[in-house]
Image (cartoon, rainbow, N blue to C red; front, side, top):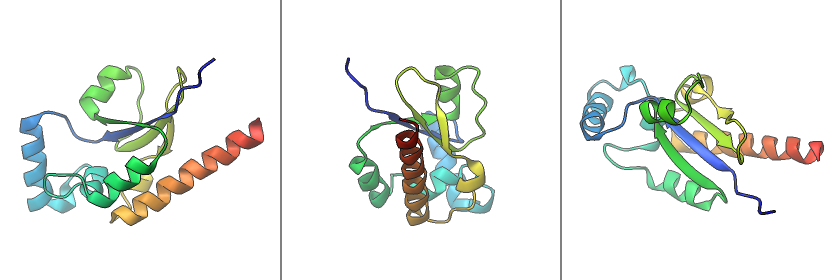
Length: 132
């Protein structure tokens, strides 16, 4: 039996598409205090992903799947996670919340996000080890 790697689901509180990306870039730049996606604000500059965040994600031994709220809702109908969120999914199991908007909305930089995600993943791993 082959064990699949877990998937890290990174779900932005923004809709996908080129036009939406332009609107979000302007909103984030002009009115950052009212921008609805703290995860986008912390992990992206004006138009591209921050290098330190990309390097951190590349170092994780799991698949990474990026979602906007519209395609997440289409791929996971019936799930009502508050967004933004970082979730984990193993095999056919339901996604589990690692970091939700309560934590993400308080973060002001990538270093905080990386530390929080490392902690959440570590705690999850410890819980799984104790259950085995």
